[in-house]
Length: 326
Length: 305
Image (cartoon, rainbow over all chains, first blue to last red; front, top):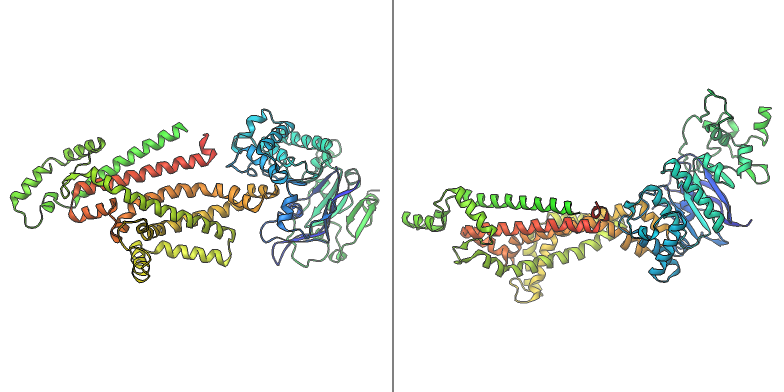
């Protein structure tokens, strides 16, 4: 599989004091789902916005490498970037209730994407919009085109957002917690839809989530983020089979798995909260919450490999978890 | 939508009735009208004759209902100064006031909205703060004073524009600017804050994620949402301008409805005072109603509920 999006050493800061993203590297291959997992505030959304060039005012992005479909994104102007966004790379967000413009109809908001990137008539764009609304499982698409966002439920709006993202047949879809604001049954429907669309269109998806259940269902590859860094990256099977970074292990311990945990046994938890990482911070960001930390964790963290394609950032040796259990 | 409209209409009628009562009461409270009309040299007999002629000898409550009933039928009484129906006086002067009001509104909107957008896009910078500072100063500036300054500068010293009267279109320029000045600060601040909110919203992030041009993001997606309160307030501001034209019209000697009102107050021509107050109030009420309707039209969330 060839890489569609390659990010290396991505850093984002919003002021002189704190760094939100501290050297993130992610590779998303064509047609695969890459899940970016972590707690709130770990920098996963900011990383995605930085890739799209959508950082809020004052956000400063640097990267060792940042390329999409072989094109270096670092030197692009806002105008050149806007030609890629919505066309080859699309994004959907966590808040379907507020992500659509309340003043324009669904049809008008969908059609303008195609007209902007591909030209053509509004009529033709509306036809494509109706077809896509049908594809994402919205009944009576012709009627919906003329409706305003407030006339639709949250689940429908997220479907509209997905259909809108597909207007120009993108290669990459970045989905920032697309189901967090929806109730559980709708969540399942949206996730199934994303998987179907991926199989059908060969779409690469960068899915941001804090929900390991979603990761287990959707991901081909997983990157676990903590305090602005990727601490472990592996294929989904490898990660769930042999979580190696203490933070990944801690996260998995927090999830109840029927049959695997003893009835009545307390569920795991990670003490404390994500620290604010100041500029020039050294060592492992997780060390204050980690049960295995020692003095050497305040120094540079070594990047290690558990196996081919399974990397983690911790001083502990690859087999530490299994050795201890044995 | 229909229920919304009916509710607003009912409210408008109630406000009109209140204005009727207040404008009637204020003219009676300012002293014995018959004495005031008759003037300082009048004898007791003159006063009695005038009292009878204007129906001021009847009980106040009868006078009130008589006036309300006549006003409802479009009869606003006769001016004792001009010996003409008040309705004719107002009708004759209306074009001047309307032209002035609309000129002022046009100048206000075409200045306030671009500056507001400009400031919003540079939120928090020195430019933004300077613009807002000017707005505060503008809001605090009395319009008669600004009028005189403009007359002295552009009328007398530079000689570019006429200082009074409206014999040609350029007579409306200076009074229009003065009138606009009273509305610009409010409209500008409203545009700015609306745009700041809109530009920080999720749907603007979506618009950027769609790769839309900067122009489309600002002028189509953000402005449409920011404009809703601006349009509503602009309609109300036009009401302010039309009634505020009492001061401007007297400074620039424009013979409009405001000038008529000012003149009749100083001459104690109470049927005209009552009628002008009522007339300006009704315009104000209608414009407020219009602003509600415009808001409902612009905001689809109001239209369908």
